[in-house]
Length: 278
Image (tube, rainbow, N blue to C red; front, side, top):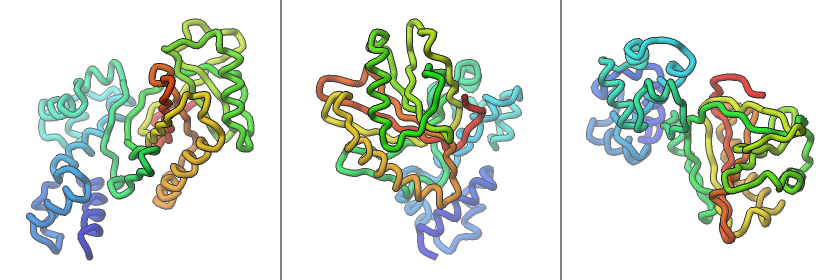
């Protein structure tokens, strides 16, 4: 068994027993503690103990959002010995306390299991995907999903053109794909026309890709959009082989991040959904 296989096995064991310390795992490993620590950090980018703590914190998010359990009970269930240790670790990692997060959920970058060997980059156009928690929020769309047949870009541009009178720097554009089809949508509208209706995107853990183009959003044409999707899809196919399923995804362009010579497109796929969508 080589070092990579050992690290992968330990990552799986951590999911089953996150309260175990390094000495527990060393009893079952054919390498020294010093070598294991070095190889684990080389493979994951962080120390063994930091990885364990980050996984425990990531697992606590659904308990904070979806249950009314006390913080002390969530700390114990997340394998922290003391409530204060959990609160301190949560605040150090995310910059807010567990109670603040429960009252006002926000996007958090987290560590998700077994993604460290899947980092991807191509000529600085598609950045390494990150894993983040995204709270539930609502966007507005035209009440219909449709089969795109490769025409999502045209549908999106027509949608933006039809509602150009609503758009300012605070508006975000969404393209949502579900099993029903594709629809464009807006977030951040100051007023909502009667022709648009609300669509709720679910809270959950998302895999987020970013595309950076040296052009305006209007020049995000069918060719480079498809290139972006194809590059990202090759990554996602690897995850599907590992058992992950993606019932929906969305693309996001924030007007405030677009200039006369740069466009940033984010593409977000749920790994784990905490509630329903629609």
